[in-house]
Amino acid sequence: MSAVAKDLTHSREAVELRPNLYWIGAMDPHLRSFDIILKTANGTTYNSYLVRGSEGVAVIDTVKESFQQEFFSRLEGVADYAEIRYIVLNHLEPDHSGALPELMRRAPQAQLYISVRATSMLKALLKPKQGAFDYTPVRDGDQLSLGDRTLRFLHTPFLHWPDTQCTYLVEEKALFSGDVFGCHYCDNRLFNDKVGDFRFSFDYYYAHIMRPFKKYVLAALKQIEPLPLTLVAPAHGPILRDRPRRYVARYRELSSPGFMAEMTEQERSLIIFYMSAYGSTARMAQAIYGGADEVDGVRVSLYDLEGGEVGPFVDLIEQADAIAFGSPTINGDAVKPIWDLLSSLAVINLSDKVGAAFGSYGWSGEAIRMIEDRLRGLKMRVPEGGMRVKLIPTEEELAECREFGRRIAGALVGEGESKGKVIEFEDL
Amino acid sequence: MPKAKVTFKDIDTTVNVPAGTRVIEVSEKVGSGIIYGCREGDCGTCMMEVLEGWNNLTEPSVLEEKVLKENMAGRHHRLACQCQVLGDLTVKPA
Ligand code: FES
Ligand SMILES: [Fe+2]
Ligand SMILES: [Fe+2]
Image (cartoon, rainbow over all chains, first blue to last red; front, side, top):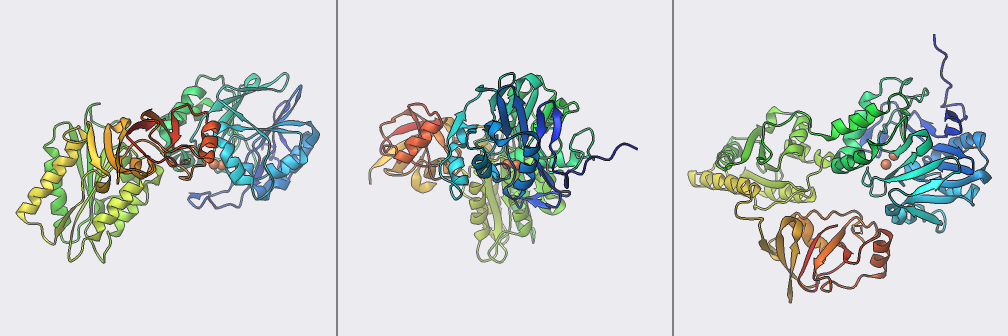
């Protein structure tokens, strides 16, 4: 039997990653949900690192405030506060900046390095605790010398806040990546080649934290992939020392469309989702589908929400160019399956997509407006006012639905609108 | 009320707005790619580039000046959540 790993939840020692490079973070095994939206089945860790060079010590990231005692104990085991010359924060969210005020108090000589985009957050996060800190904003490629070791900063914004950056320890080929490549997974054995199976947590973290920012993930990967890498040290979860590139490759995979759609580059896609109580909204959906299908260059799909699940539909929406939602108005509201889907879209980026709403109603038709407001709130463009039909659609109304479908599809291939379009503010 | 034309270059769309309208009130509704964070002139997320008519916006406040500086903004960069439209202009996400 292999030796039992040191119980890091109880011990307060630093863990050596390389000579003069230590993990000094904290274990939070009891946490079950993070930031409300994330489940953490076995807790998380707040990873902080200490690097010693011939000319001073740098601390990279801190921990959540309530865990600062654990962090300070580990730090004290490997350095004196007076030796700390630099503190680097890759990300200012409180789970990583919580112990900063106290650390600055104990090491007042230390200079704080944060990304240029973090400066306004610094004030907002720390104002209740202490006056202004002196800090040095860093840009992409800036370097910090520790004598025989060098820290280089990579500007990787929006992963997952505007302020996020990564820090590369050149001589060790080690990347301190902040939340990137992290996951909520708490395991005493700390290293990816020792801990339990954390693949689910890794993918889950990506899906909930990084996925809305795919575009920025791809930009960051462009900078990270060419680096020599023998260690990736994220701010949460296992430290990736065994073949760290696999995790970089996994991010590339997760950020690229998986199952390729059967479409050409030029084709656009429209997906129509609907729920129907008595078949009227379903008939509208069919008519819209028929109309849209007449437009060349647009691939149209039609789904009854009753026959599907939210997760795969979210994946479809992420890849679509336009999405239409059909719901009857029942008790003055759209029906629950529509809201279930619309409330699950925060994990994807919708900002350049077109949205539309339609549905039949009995004596009032509020659902359409509500759906449209939500679509706008999700930053979608809603160029066509929603299509409402009272009770059972007549032949003329179905013809209007076809026309509605044709216009939405047309907008995708640049018919009529978009090119040099002029709109009145009042009509927005 | 005097009107002004705001053109969002990225989506090739122009909106006729009453003078005094903030860009933030328009850009999201038409689907321009300008993105917002704090919406109150603090985070710098909404930085946009003014391609034409940069004199047709209200002068930046002290706060806006500061955030622009912190974000290394160029001469024709402004915060879309802060500046108000006074005359015709063309903008795009920075
Ligand atoms: S959105 Fe934060 S400064 Fe404008
Ligand atoms: Fe974070
Ligand atoms: Fe975090």
